Image (cartoon, rainbow, N blue to C red):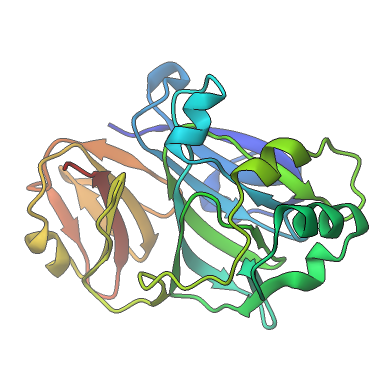
Length: 265
């Protein structure tokens, strides 16, 4: 099934999305969410993000932290970088460990922007963002985000934009420390990007990688470049499908897509 698109306007978004993503009324779109029919939420949330400015410096809660706050789940996520302008950066982790008091002071003063570890980024990079990681996405980036379906964000700092901050909750769930997740790096063709704990994600080129998928469906298909078909119907960048089998998937030469699914323990 082709999933429905939800355009989400953001102050850091773009008004010039590529035409394959469809009409959006000239709004400043930062995210496109993919839902089931009637915008039904699914057990996995796939998004495209488009940035013209930095996102807020923020943090997401774990399952345990979320449930203590009466929420269904936390928000663990990962990013596959599709495009990055020269000089584009991601802020992931802090340059040194911070206490809760230090994080509060830095967030209130704006020093947090200097303490975040801003990493150069290029197309084809992958980053897994565990819950509790202090992070931000810089300007000039187009990426695919795969995440737990609860969209919970606690903003610590927003560069003076007139939006609500969530310092108490954010500081309570944050682990402000250097980032060292070994799942991150530049992506090879036909490889497993992550295997959980909440979801898995594969990068497939020319269709070869789909043969390595052992997990049962459902599967989320996210075209990144080139052309593919499913059941004989074209699927292109901007589409997102949820299917029960990969048998009808054909990926043409010099084309790539992401395949995601729910992790099972």
